[in-house]
Structure formats: C-alpha cells, structure tokens
Length: 393
Image 1: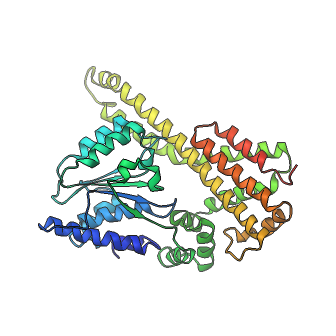
Image 2: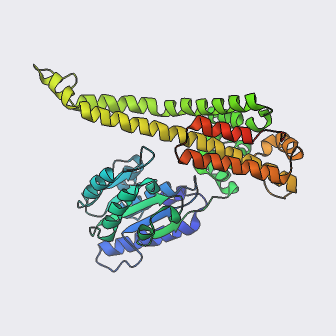
Image 3: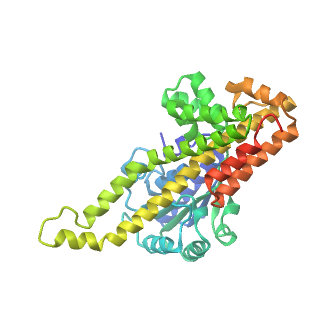
C-alpha cells in the first residue's frame, strides 16, 4: 500500500498530490517541476483527513518512489521521526507570534537528508493575527527547499494574503459506503457495525474508527443522543448540561493527564532533578522553574482546548440528531445518521413543527459560537439545553 491509499474517498485530491510529488522529483533532478509549489493549504470538513493528506504528501516528497509506503523515508514520516519533517499541533486555543517566529527559524534550515524540509502546520487557522503576519513573510520568501503544508477547515479561515500564496487542496466528506468498506477491510470490523459507525460518523474516518472499535465512544454518543428526549423541564436541562460538561472534563483529563506527567518528568530530568553533585540539583531545578511554569500554562491551555473539542463533538452529534428529526418531519428520502434511534426521532418529529426544529439547531450552533468566543462552557451549554426543551413551552 502506498501512502495515499489511506485517504478514503479523496480521489481528486490524491491525483493532485501524486502529480505534485512527481513534479517535486523532477525539480530535484534539475527539471522545471511546474506542478510543485512551496506552500500548500489543505482544507476540508472535520474528519475528512486533511492532516493525513498533508502527511502523506510529505512522505511522497521524501520518498524516492513518491510515496511507496514501505521504505525508510515513508516509515519515518509515519512514526514522526523523519529529521526533515516538523509537525506543528497548536496545543492551546491559539498559536502565538513567539512560537511562530521560532518555527520560521527552524524551517529556514537546510534539509538534513538533501531532499526537502517540510513543515506540516495542523490547525493553522488557530494562528493569531501577529503569528499569521509572520507566517506570511516566511511563505513569501521561503528557502529553496522548504515546503509549508498548512491545514484549516476552509480557505476563508486563513488570511487572504496567505491563502493567495498557497495552492489549495480541498478534501471532501467521504461517502458512508467508502468509510464502511475501509473499516471492514482494514480493521476487520463486522459489516453491520462498520455500516453503523460510518453512518453515525457522517464520513469522519477517525470518528468512525473510534465508534467501531471503542465501546466507550459508543456509550458517550448514546448519552449525548439521549439528551433531547430528557429535557422535560428546567431541572432536567440544568442536569443534562452539567452532565455533558462533566463528561467532557473527564474525557479531557483522561487524554491529557498521562501526557502532562511525562512532559513534566522529562523537563525535570533536563533541568537536573536526580543529578548527583553538591549544589547541582538545587541550582538546575531553580533555573528551570520558569520553564516549568511555562509548560504548566501550555498544559492548562491544552486541557481547555481538549475539553471544548469534546463538547463540540457532542454538539455536532446533536446537530445531526435534529437534522434527522427535520428529515422525518419533511418525509425526505435521505439516509438518517441516527437511524438506530428512529423511535426517538419520530417521537420528537411529531411533537414540534419544522420551524421549531430549526430553532433548536440554531440554538446548538449558537452554543458552538459562544464556546469559540470563550464563554463559560457550563453557562453556554445550559442556555442551549433550555432552548432545546421538549415539548415547546
């Protein structure tokens, strides 16, 4: 299997990237390489695989066979150990100018192995205005062998000046059938479970994989989708909001706690904790107090982002649920993402008008906007659940 084979349902994007990798190889051999450029912007909805596409393209640039999937270069990219690939994942809610300037300095270095130096910037839309301006200057005048791969949900999420200097690769939501086929053939998931997971994930490959393989992920989805039918009064709305936020906090803690501990242990080791010698340990630890404080701040920011990402996933599940309610109300001949909860869908569809269902969808989207604007999650979610009360008061 080549590096592009994991991109489910992205045939057009894969063809573009294959041609670019061929042009890059031509450039290295002294040709014109007209299909290659130094800055790329990968866009697409959540779960479409834009980060995976960027990583596959990086492997194809390093690989002598343009992404064979089994050579040392491809393997190093897959495990994150290639010396000429830097992957940037903003840990907090934003990515600042200080980090961006340090990144630009690192990106300016010559390739270690002689082909390309690649910077893969995930969630590049999280860059602050100052960081984006600094990034623009680096993209305008890049070193000859440096390639920038930026990822964002849509081109409009990036500064227009950055967008205009990048070649845009647009990924689409993969078809449910393609995702289900991938789960069956690559993960050995039973066809019925694969169909359920692909449909529930609405084409998000990573989410579909989690739903198919992780019973806890399926349980969290069930808990979220049970919310609409439980909102009979104010008390139930407050309880549901509290439960959703608490679950997000617990999941975020499970994701970040082990990573936080390992990072702190590594930092303490770097600054000499456990070293022998008179006065050595105390002096180095004191010197590292500032670095430790900075790390803890980053970890706190990462935990906040993770918590809000978990809540946002739950909100998107609710949006698909009410979209299915709307489809039932109109009798639309479409595939329902939550067909496994058809009884709830039909019950709620009978209890309100399509206009009221649309208002509930608007309430969920407003909650997402408030969370993105750093509104207190408990308050934002409570306001939403109160707007979702059923039947209409």
